[in-house]
Image 1 (spheres, rainbow, N blue to C red):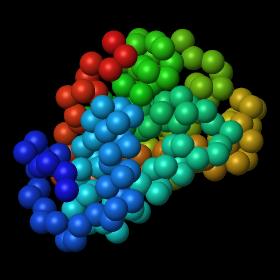
Image 2 (image 1 turned 90 degrees about the vertical axis):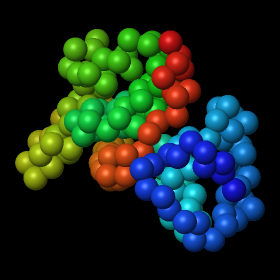
Image 3 (image 1 turned 60 degrees about the vertical axis):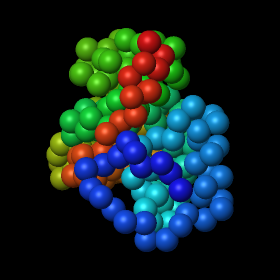
Length: 191
């Protein structure tokens, strides 16, 4: 089981049952690949069913086949997290934007205000839609989806944009509610 000396959340959750061997291998792979186990995974590890649901959805949305690049998906995560003021996701996914873009300034600009960033029309349209979904989803109409099509996104891409933003709106709220803390390692990545 994961060492809990540095708690990932403000809650003291008892282990429902042990993680499966494949889930433990997943954690070991994360540790090998990035050098630490993200606190979000530690947080969900108290329950193997919840852990599996979270990792399956995350892996599908952020790593699965899509017309969106990995960077674009991370940019969406940061834009939604910026509106929601989610410390965990801004720190973790801001670091991913820095790494994937090779531009430490871009990650900070999206964290603070993507509108100040030098973005392509495609990325500006994508982040405008992500912000609208997060702030005022009830006002989205066909012309908003058409703006994405005009910026070069397919209808499948629009589905993926909506799915990524929806996922991060949920995880932002969960992370904030349980005071999920980002790993210290994220702060220094790609600086």
